[in-house]
Image (tube, rainbow, N blue to C red; front, side, top):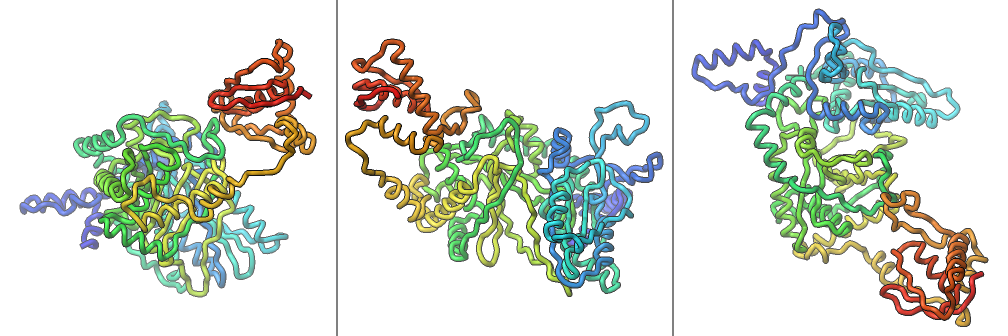
Length: 625
């Protein structure tokens, strides 16, 4: 049956109309109502030979196009893969395979321009961007021989970094393929595209078809691939035609209700605050669950009539609730958006992002929260056809330049499709790590269900987080999952976050603070002795200021010398205004390094007693030095 619908989808608009008219004459309903039609291509006789056709952008493409216009140097949406090929490589067959892929998929030879830029007679600059589809025939693969360089591996990494970190010009086709030879039997194939023409599923399609074509061409066989029923531009046209009228209203009404009111901004455990503008400097931390724990999680999700994804989503919401204290938790997640036969083999940006919002008020037990999240996920999937870009436009949340994504800060993705390793006769193929990565979210949990258990990584913005913090987050997530498996009826506030070692460190190790010290000396005398021993050592770090009040004092580090000098200045000032050791002095300051300096100053002044809010009197005798 799927082959029948694929054949129907290949009909031209004229053939489709004739087919449906004949069915209508016989009183039959057209089976093509559920298929995606091929678009009616425009005649381009008045255009240059470099333009084969144009088509509107999909909603997702439209957002990325605007993002790139705002910052043409942005490389956060580069989609790069590097394959290490070891063995005897048929370079000619590889080049032919890539050329055939570009001929097969229009999106790989598509650029983006405004309509007015294609119309020589137009004087307007305000017309909408369009996909510009170019004819096939360009040289696709470039080859660089690095074997004679001083260090081929270093030279390769430098080349890869330059290729993958260079911004794309959207007015040019957006597939870059380079083959780097580092040894007689070793090549690195660098594939780089912009996200506007690709997604994770597309990469799998590309690599699968590339290997099929390589096998055929290396043995002088023709391409075994059947023609595509539709192209990405056909899907983009169909998407816009579908999202109208009652369909659009039904979708938008649901999401407006779901995301009504002020959306939460989570106070995540940042090591550094947001900057003035969003940054995309990314890093990854590995995350792996044992096979035993994975199997227990699958069993629990089955007993609870929930998917593994829903169980992981609920757990992540508990973790964020425990970190932030927020009862309103919003997390984003991608869906492949390829539930139609015609889209399974397409390369292009079809992925959609859904937003799942949950209320954790009242300290529910985990099993009840899981039921709530399951209903939220099911409802969201039932209204998945509204593109995320359209959702942002409708919700229109308050945006800030330092905000990485609208609507949510944390993302969870679970890949459950079995990904088989690439295999070619005479070649060993493995993924080559990229020198750098970029982050489009504050935090992203990216997991895959493998035969060895759940594994993946936490992707994070390293301008906000240190690796040590992400390591703790990963450990807490794993501990939380293990605790849920043991007792899924426990209230979310009582589920364990700390493993045995971390609990002992917090409760015992960090509380063993008793130290011997000279009983005949006052606190400020002991402090002054430390100043003499290590004047440039850090005495304290103050992270209590807000970026709105004093951005320069965020995470301000104060040395012993600086703190002592400031305390002396305050003590001399107090004495200058007539205060002496026989008077009581009250201190009213927020928790900060200035409060510590003031306490030391009063002690240095020789005041018998100082009074601090919620504190007992502190006795001291001394003089400022």
